[in-house]
Length: 395
Image (cartoon, rainbow, N blue to C red; front, side, top):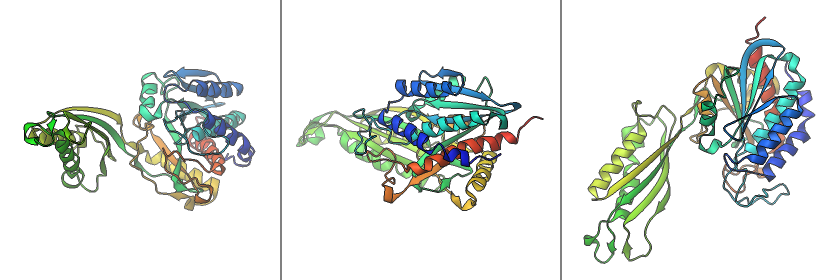
């Protein structure tokens, strides 16, 4: 039942698709051209497409025999990054770039859909192809709210992410939490402006901001177990207009990431601890504070059974379990909204190759991928789906 030789014949096509998407990146919920390209490709295969969450595209392939329904997902959105690569398929959209690999994800899933359509006789059950908009900011949740997991009801989900920290030729898959939950915070510390030569007449929000940044770090080391991965990072600090002026306010933004259930119902509740410390520090400095928290993603947790399916697939495809490596990241991914509701598995497809300069970090303006791994991603989609569905065939 495993297919490999046929997939190799689509190497040029999957690369061409990826390069086309790379040249024409679009931001979240604005993937208008991208969605039309995806729709046209799927419709050319004889699949009926529907729109979900505006620019999201969904198609269902029914097998010839009854069975389970597996969702295969690819994300579509690009990032607000100015590309610095000079190759001829670099982004044509100023300030917008596929700097995270979503162009590759779409290309791999489209070609996988073509191969699965050509081998429909092998399918027991159904495969739902989901092309998701706005992964960077909660697009999956919008698709869930609009019923993407229903009609037909999805029994399990599988996703693949190109990953430059993993070497080309290696595949990362682990049981349990593999990507972090994410809360994004925005703080405004309000003081009273004044002259730096007479600081006692002002209320200094800059000093309060410095104390906030330092004091919240004790959450990871003094309030939560070292065995519970937690990261609090500040990405923006802004305040003041001149060296001799104490500003009225300081703005801070950042993120809280965790590899466990992090809400107020948990024992750890890092975000609630964060709010407590910010408020107490501001009180000490006679400042007031405005705190805005956006709960962006829950942790992405891989189901043990689905991981077993992938590991067996990798072993049969590549002839060695040594292809598999451990990979856990504190980055977040909203595939977690699917795996929160149905058994899911998220696979990291290694594409890091220093000789090809494909080892730059994700979201970097020099980000690029080793295109030789694209057919491996197609093979994982195709054979992972067949391997899963054969286990639930209704005879």
